[in-house]
Image 1 (cartoon, rainbow, N blue to C red):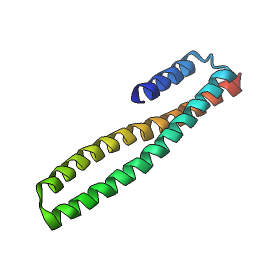
Image 2: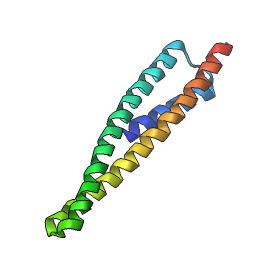
Image 3: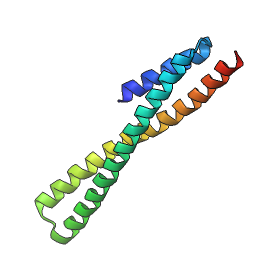
Image 4: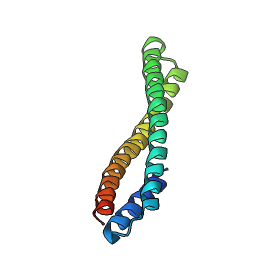
Length: 111
């Protein structure tokens, strides 16, 4: 997904620089933004649940201090950190796409 969103960012920047955007290009970018918004929502929900599971595993670790609880906490913490990093990428790049879409629309309307 990271490669796809960066690819769309580069494509939108190229359209702005060349000032050759068509209505179909703008609709295509809007469609991709919609896909990324959906992906962002799904990852937000999953990230929240993994974070809650991580908190519960830490509480379990405090109460039991067993090796399986340690392993669970370590695994969920690692998974949670990767989800945070992925969500950060999705969120920031989607915000960049919003700005690029606004710029494209300004250029397209000026023609």
